[in-house]
Amino acid sequence: MATSQNRFNNRSGSPRSAVYASATLPENNTAKKNYTGLRYGNDHGSINFGHIHKSGDCTADILLQASDGRHSISLDKEGPRKSCTQITAPGRISIESGEDLTETEDSLYIGAWNGNIDINALNGKIRLIGTDIELIAVGEGGSKGNVRIKASETIELDGKKVILNAKAMYKLATSGKAEIAANSCLNIYSSVIRGVTDAVANKDGKNGGRNFQVKQAEF
Image 1 (tube, rainbow, N blue to C red):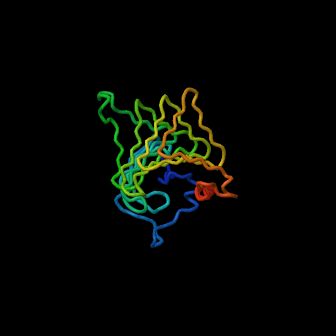
Image 2 (cartoon, rainbow, N blue to C red):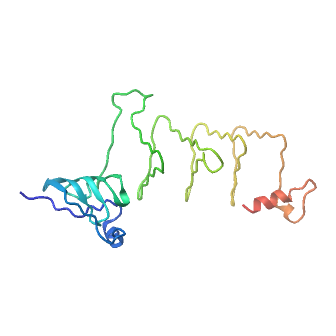
Image 3 (tube, rainbow, N blue to C red):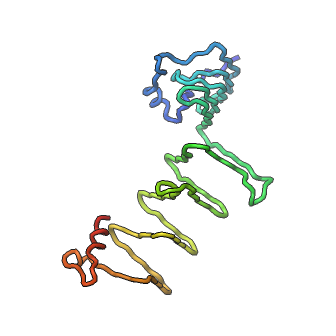
């Protein structure tokens, strides 16, 4: 009976040609080896116990792969991917749960004790859809507990209400044009309100203002 002879599954998540070009052997300049590897399969797929990946740097305790080697599940044992579980598919990967649960229950959990969780769409959108969406940062100190949103073009907020509540301070700044518009009523309240124009750069105002202008110009 014919058996699948897929040798393209490198478990790297990168284009195969790039991986092979940069593949390096372990420090002792020899590939991984074992004498107890076992494989069952046919032209539809296979399951391997003790599979050594093509780059020779890592052994999989279990490798389950379809006729297309890009469609697989690998439980890697040692090497640069020690204790890693990798699932790859040239098509879609779908995870569905919660049909028998209620709205308030957790039906899907993804947790990491240490390290980062990366979601990367190289050529597509990332969508979060739900009755409510919460982003919560719980770290402490100035370097942790932050939520950062960056965009190369536009950040757009659209809703019935947009509420910003800053306990210490907030700042809106731009090196270009700024507009504030309210079609019904605009309320501004502060214990002290100061307005400074760029004219103080040449001559300071009676109540000062140059220091503030210099600080903003640095932005």
